[in-house]
Image (cartoon, rainbow, N blue to C red; front, side):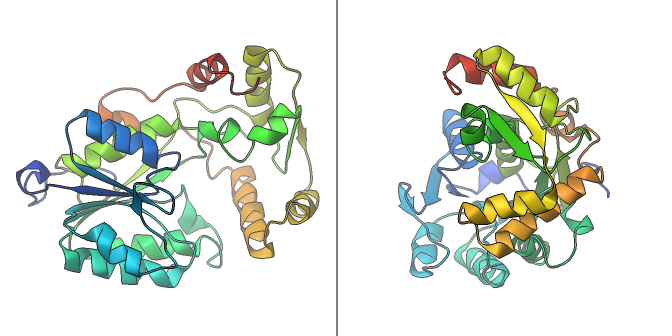
Length: 289
C-alpha cells in the first residue's frame, strides 16, 4: 500500500469550500470531528438521524437536503453496500469536491462477504472523480467506555473471542484530528491511511489498566467464537452482524491489526495518544463508575 503524501493537482480546499458535511455527526468520530472543525473556524453540517441535520440512509429525501451546499464530505459507510455508490454519485453531483471515507483496517484481507458497506464506500470514492482519502483505523479505545464493551466492563467481565495477540487501539480523537486535516488541507489525494495507537496491548492488559484506573473489579475472559456468536444472538444481534463480528476477531487473532503504524504522525506531525492517557481521562469522568 502506498501511503506517501503528495500534493497532486489539487488546490487548497479553503479557497473554494464553504461547508463540510459530516455523516455520523453524533457518533464516536463524527462528533469529535465536528467539534474540531468548528473550533478551527470551518462551517460544518453535522448529519445523523438524530442530529442537527437529519440524515437517514433509508430515506433518500434526507440525502439531498444534507448535501445542499456542501463541498467536502466525511463519509461513514452504510450497512447496505448498494447505497454507497448512489450516495457518492449524488454527493459529487451536488458539488462535493473532497471526500474522506472512514473504513476499517485490513478490510481487504477479510472474506468478501464481510464489511461490504465499507468495501463499496471505498470503491465509490475511488471512482468518484473528486479528491478522496480513505482512513482505516484500528479498534477505537472509546469502545471500552462509549460503546461495545462498556456495559460488560461495568458489570465486571469482558468476554471476547480474542487471545493474547495485542492491538494498538486508537483514540477516536486522533481519528477526528486526522480527518479534519484531510478535509481541510492539501496533499492527501488518493491516499489510504492506516491509523493506530502508538503501542499494542492485549485485551487482558487493557481491561487490567481500566480496572486499576477506575478502582472497580474487572476481568477479561477469552471465549470461543461459538460462545461469542451465541452471546450476540441472545442479545438480539442479527446473524449476519454476529458472523461479521466473529470474522473481525478472527482477523485480529491472525494479527491483521497488531503492528502499530506511523500514519497518525505522518498526517498530524505528532504521535497518537497512548491508551494509558485515554484510560486516565475516561476514568476521571466516571466512565466506569
